[in-house]
Image (cartoon, rainbow, N blue to C red):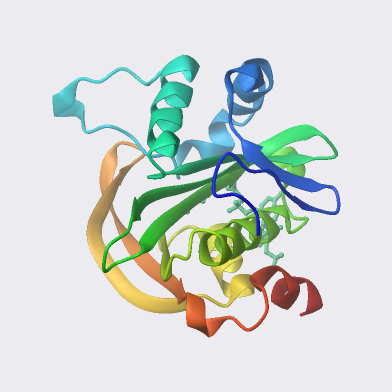
Length: 196
Ligand SMILES: CC(C)(COP(=O)(O)OP(=O)(O)OC[C@H]1O[C@@H](n2cnc3c(N)ncnc32)[C@H](O)[C@@H]1OP(=O)(O)O)[C@@H](O)C(=O)NCCC(=O)NCCS
């Protein structure tokens, strides 16, 4: 069984590995090149808190602190060794919940080749098999048709709407909730996805 964290997960040319300070140059470049691609779907801080966007150093530091206590698994997605995106398992809760959220993005130059669904499937398999979580949840804006395809491909269950659930692109936005429980998967989600 893979260790919980830090861990590297591989499937053919796709690798999920911990986001680190060494990713600075590639991360800043892909984020800058894809500003418009992300804008509509990007989490923001409500204006009254006057927060500046976090620096790369702060992003990595915060995620590493969370990862150290196994409250988050911040993966970068690499394709043939190139940084293509991120999959972040966050808000991991243990006790009688054993659940987490997953968020993801991929650069436009890597889009449309099924990398995000595969990377999310790899992360979910890891959460269920190694971390022994019970439930994974993904929240998506109803307008985000590309992301809705990701959960559709993965076969996540639709659980309805949460009005004004997250602050995205400057406003509180309605979201649709999708989830999967560990006992809904026979074998692995990666094999289900790649054999479908
Ligand atoms: C959502 C996202 C992660 C999907 O990643 P991906 O690796 O391209 O996923 P897929 O290859 O399965 O493509 C999903 C859908 O996106 C659409 N799509 C793919 N490439 C596209 C492109 N270049 N331009 C516009 N739409 C595109 C297609 O409708 C595709 O569905 P299809 O395979 O049935 O044709 C990616 O589009 C992204 O990062 N978007 C911006 C950030 C974001 O929305 N994150 C999720 C927040 S919930």
